[in-house]
Figure 1 (cartoon, rainbow, N blue to C red):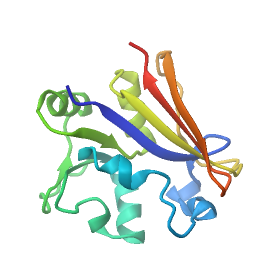
Figure 2 (cartoon, rainbow, N blue to C red):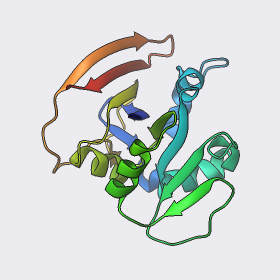
Figure 3 (cartoon, rainbow, N blue to C red):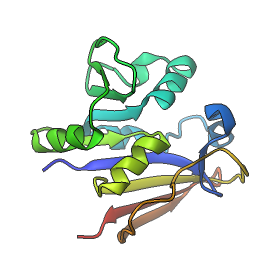
Length: 177
């Protein structure tokens, strides 16, 4: 069965975005030639789930090809129906139904790239199998929290911790069986 992985960066105090969905704090750890394992990670992925606000931000900052590169299916979780663009589907149905359907299909793994509403809905339903969290050495003090209240407790199994010259620490956990 396919697994769903969260691969995301957060501030040390647990924010994945500053107010107004601002992700500029990620630039603090940009380093030429360093992608923090992203390329290696995405080799095992053929499906991406992302919230609409995160999708819109990446679209404006990087461009659509960052997600829809012709190599994977992209599901943008949204409340506003839009026509499909390439391999990008704007999905308005039940996130749980979508993930269960995707997990049942054969293929590579599924990548969740946020945002917080999507992540927390998946966590509430115990659907994330692996968490790869890159901690950026900054205290933002405000913004969008990675983990919201109202989720059940979940035990995780530690896999690895890796440190980088930029001060970023990458933690990897898997769901405890």
